[in-house]
Image (tube, rainbow, N blue to C red; front, side):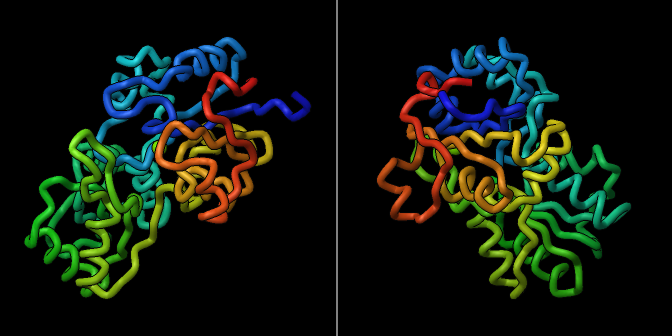
Length: 256
Ligand SMILES: [Mg+2]
């Protein structure tokens, strides 16, 4: 193939490597080829609910090579952003274990009283009280940050409300728009590149979603490989007017 060899890979999870409880054919072989070629990679996910070790364990259950150090979540990027822009802050969290843990790791004080920062991500116990507290704090002047704004979460049950749906409620109630960290915003991309140690023009983003994975690359100047095993098809490329650098129907079709 007459193209450059990428020096680092940022790889999406759901729809790219597995779908629900099934590994996508070719995914394990693809990852093994990356490992054999000694090419560094990170698993890059918008899901803020799990700890990196839980994500790595989940990936290994599919036979995919993963350590916690190779996982970068929107929760981790959010914590890094807050550490950088709002150091030693009091933070009110709407979220789950992964987000709480990431914020504690960077020495934030978690509180529901007079926070400096409100952070919101997927929270499957989200209710009126949490929406109220978040909204009042933002109205009182707290910074407002969303881990990501994915509208839904694909599950066996169907498409369930995602972080984007929760953030619409908080945003509507507080009349403020959040700073968004996850894909397709480039904040998560910049931090992931720093961690991976590769530059924009030597890195490849691999993913199934035009509106998140591929748009991140388009915005951030990083080449993208779209695989049509998840949410979007080749026909969607024109519909969404978001153009991946490469499209394959199967990861086995990709030469590292
Ligand atoms: Mg995906």
